[in-house]
Amino acid sequence: MTTFNAAVLGAAGGIGQPLSLLLKMNPLVKNLNLYDVVNTPGVAADLGHICTGAKVSGFVGDAQLRDALKDRDVVIIPAGVPRKPGMTRDDLFNVNAGIIKTLATACAEVCPKACFLIISNPVNSTVPIFAEVLKKAGVYNPKKLFGVTTLDLVRARTFVAEAKGADVTKVNVPVIGGHSGATIVPLLSQSGFEFSQDEIDKLTHRIQFGGDEVVKAKDGAGSATLSMAYAAVEFASDVLKALAGEEVVVCTYVDASAQGGKTAYFAHLVKLGKEGVAEILPVPSLSDHEKKLLETANAQLITNIESATT
Amino acid sequence: MFTRTGARMFAASNTLLHKVAVLGAAGGIGQPLSLLMKNSMLTSDLTLYDIVNTPGVAADLSHICTPAKVTGFMGDDIGAALKGRDVVIIPAGVPRKPGMTRDDLFNTNASIVKKLAEACAQHCPNAAFLIISNPVNSTVPIFAETLKKAGVYNPAKLFGVTTLDLVRARTFVAELKGADVNKVCVPVVGGHSGATIVPILSQCGFTFTDDEIAQLTHRIQFGGDEVVKAKAGAGSATLSMAYAGAQFAFRLMAAMNGEKDVVECTFVESKVNELPFFSSPVRLGKNGVEEILPVPEHSAYEAGLMEACMKDLKGNIEKGVQFANSA
Image: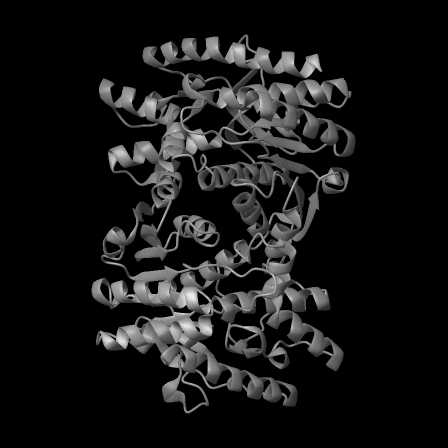
């Protein structure tokens, strides 16, 4: 079995730690570098005791960032600050934009051919920011840059299964667009279930604001960490399987400038392969309700992307 | 429509599902442990209990697309958290700081474990209890005495989780020998702290120099200290403990479901020697402990380790029993 070198940037954080645990447990990972501005030696010592094949190393502080990125096939980035109650993902922009720029600069220098999986919010903007840094360095490959939207898909499955009393492991709901509030467009019409308009409205809202649900329940103690780790590793596993030669279809936020859509970046149904993005699939046929959602999503996405590229 | 690929195990058609509680679910071990239990197809229902933050942790975990229903309980609601449970995993308590032994935690953690045992005795006496709270050598006897007082003690269902020592033994031996860690197996018997941890390296199929044996033994015995030191005040092993705790829980649940020949080292009430509690290989089954297997054959060096183990462990156990019977 082909195995890969991974790095987690932000590995000591609320998402980073459980995410690193799940990666350490994943048989597709042979080497795992954990980077953060604090605490990574401790996290690495902890994870290093687990009896699975991946070798774990900790790197701490800016001086060690480039060492952490050496020879990486996949770089997963949850680094940044989380939301507090009342905040939108956009409110995080200023702090997290700076962090992402720093990390992108190092990635461009050390491992430009890696796949980059961006979790840091607001994803709608941090992905374009990352792209701009890579473009400036002359190493941008749009097939290898992904905004992780998988948690929206995970939530869609869970909420639909709950609403329909269905087996959640058999529920599939594509989610396209972006990764915040009204930019999230769940395609319930593609799920195989019938819904009343009321159910559609409620489910759509819940999927779009699932993150707020957790921020509120945590009451100042943070945002989704464990479910984000779960979702990120589901996506990372799919990327690794694709790099190993399997054909995998996912939803993910990618450079869509060649698609002729309204926005330069968009979460599409994407076929992954050895080179990263193998093919961006056409948007499925949408219900009238979904067409409206898409309009709203596009308008907001344009703003999110503009604020990143200026 | 695209297919879901993520790593999901599908339960066999006759697999039983389990109602699991994690007491201490909002803590450093509790959160990743709860994540691993939520991810498991063996879990149908997961309750999370702690003195703070559990509603938030439960909301977070409940979004994950696996079948287990997740509910959070806090403070006085422990009865509701324990209702109907058949597996209760207990990581609750305070962790070590650099320079501390697991015994230094005794005063704080003994009271916590006693209280939780009283609640378990009242609300789910027939559950399997997996004790992670340190010092395990003492908290397990405390739990037993408390269940006895309530007239509900079943020694086949009380387990001190020593799995992290076995996990460490496998990792350290594989590292040293450049071996595939998935093919390494090292029995570890005795207790769960320092010199009470007795790795039986003579039984793992590799040859070692005396120096290697001494180094490996020390590293396995003090692996916990290694992490406490590396974390420099930020805590003790959390992620590896969550991994080990979950692995033991999965093996127990598989055995409870009828899987044959599930043998794990675990700290249980035992007659393998003169101590009332001891960790040796245990065959698990539908009703918990099915058969306690003898301590494996071991070398003269390991016999020496056993002697040191017995001394310390005797004191740890007595300390626990005394505490439970005092208040």
